[in-house]
Length: 362
Image: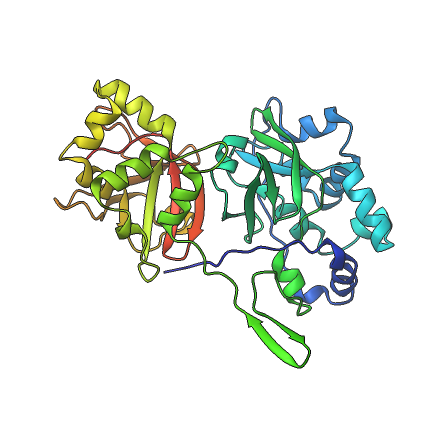
């Protein structure tokens, strides 16, 4: 099964070299084409036009034909660099906007700023310390410091949750660069091993290991804003934290949000304390865990799946479908209904997390 590593990269300083290399060797550049969809009433592109601070971004989208994509149904999350962000980069790199717009790497760079689902700031912040796949195919890293969201360590979300009919726009103050474009030039990402020589003494510092699923849940529960607090408490009460903490395992976890648990408790007329004390809790939690690593592309490609195996001790399985471009689990199930994947592909060292909006009951 596919396992992805975390990508932590902030390489605007080498963007000029990247552009130059891509211009001279376009064969190494892969452009992702996204089919156009039916137009939304108020699209993420409309928001960008109305905001008046994204003229370079809009010109880039038009130059690549991706403006039509962002007027489609979506849903999308767009990380939108401002004109000031582009201007700072172009000035520092001694590039003109025209040179950027004519570059064959432009489509990949733009699609690296787009997620294939709508994720508001709360959902993004819940992914602190993890990474998510972009429409371009590579991952961005997410971190939260003092309540501020950063992408790839240095690009700051300066304005969040601009909502459109087909998605959400988060404004960022830097341009993001796909890692493979940098890797083609042999530029090392920050997480890679580095060797430093001081006074004839060589010290090699290994990058920290990617967090496990359990560590991602715990970090999110301790974040600001916090997410997965009930899930973490349930895992602790059921003695299942270690089950999600083995870096050698390969697991797929469908993780309900705090709001999903709150809705379930209300529907079932239970308190959180009653849930945590229930003898059924381990089975419920393991019903959210599938053996193997199933990223979003694998799930969508295999759907419909009538009986996805889980770790539930009674052998209960999940039904997975794609409905209206959303991955839905156990559609129409009683008493809580089906769960929709709201954020996909949160990768860990031992698998992948897909965030869902409803608790699953065996």
